Image (cartoon, rainbow, N blue to C red):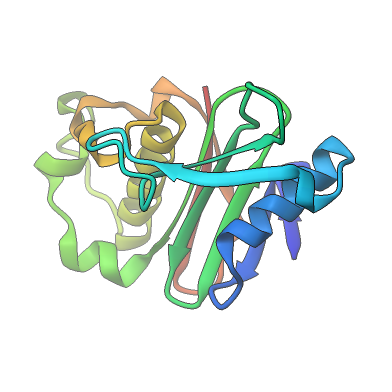
Amino acid sequence: MNGDADGIVGRHGSEEDADAVLRTRVAALLALPAAEVLVGRSCPRCGSSGHGRPWARARGARTEVPVSLSRCGPHLLTAVAPTGRLGVDLESVAAVARGWDEELVLHPSERGVARSPRERAALWARKEAILKALGTGLTTEMSSLREDDAEIVDLAAPPGHVAALARL
């Protein structure tokens, strides 16, 4: 695992179990055995525990530890912090180029600027990271947000990819 953003972000292979990675990272943060950390998912739309926003907390605790994750091809990106709300996203530049829709992604105040495919992908990753930090995911339209709505750090990413960490 390589770290970014002062140890908040970790890069992993997609073959790794995301829940196990989050459990291990949260356990290290809280100085607990991994068996004392519970992890799961919660969908803000349907309430399912089979998918949705990841969560983690120490066994017996009510307060969750802020966590986020993103998968893209053979890559898994995780973020864990002691406090605050955070979101992380990893995107393929080529995939964003194929699916780019200015009206879907850009706030009206951000439209009309020429951007390279890499800049578009970076903007997409920043917006998704904000949505994850909000806890709503794509139930909130990307175009309703501006980059300035959160503290964003662009992260080192594998070749052909971009990544971002948002903190609220």
